[in-house]
Amino acid sequence: MLKNCCLVLRHFDPTSELRRASVKGLAFSLLRACTRVADTSLDLVVFDFCAQQLGNLDPPLKQVLGQEARAISMTLRILEQRNSDLYLATHHMGIPVDAQAIIALDLGLTFLWNITDETPWNAEEVVRQGGLGILERILQNHPTTPSLCRSGFGMVANVAEVPKLRPALLKAPLLLGALAACLDTPDNLVVNYNVVGILCNLLAEVRSDCQSNVGRYSN
Image 1 (cartoon, rainbow, N blue to C red):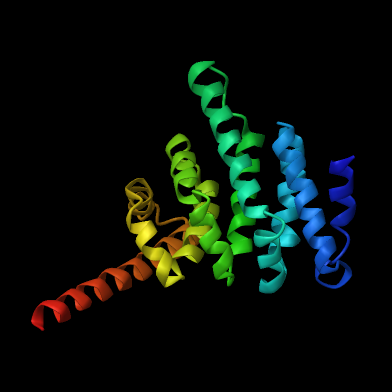
Image 2 (image 1 turned 90 degrees about the vertical axis):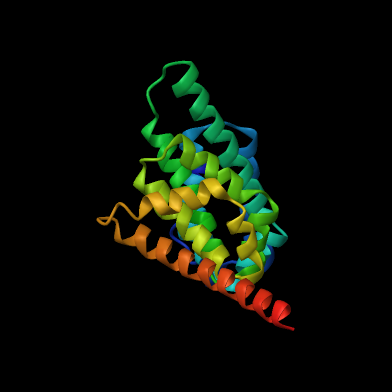
């Protein structure tokens, strides 16, 4: 039923046809269902709807999703559990990687990428809820999956645009290593665009710290 609801809702424009309370309740109900049932087909439909429809709302409504509907914390919880399940299946049970499950991870990260765009509160919530560590573990398990790098680093690029969040990125060594590795894939323009943007913001942070230290010692 939930999958059919999402398919029907794809025909509506949430920006004009859903009120604040409706958007909040819809996101909460759909994501909560995914936290309660491990069903890849449900993840696919829900994350696709969230990424394409709810993730592209105006920033004030996106903050409502992150702050009041707990969309970010629930999405991260789902992604962490699905990534753990995939690791167990492939590394301990010898089951081939489920391509649909990878697509679901990508759509979940895409939702986080969209919902953090120009919405600093949501970007901060990603950091507060351990999103950087979750992304590190996803990329550790699937280091050669371009779609996960694209969506994951899109989210990180939004985090890096918030100055007070940059120190958290500098304390994520595995993520920084993954960023550097992506520079060796020149054929992926979107990934490289995000990676360069992240590195530029981090260099600005390091430069600012160096200038502050120089000023402090010179005085």
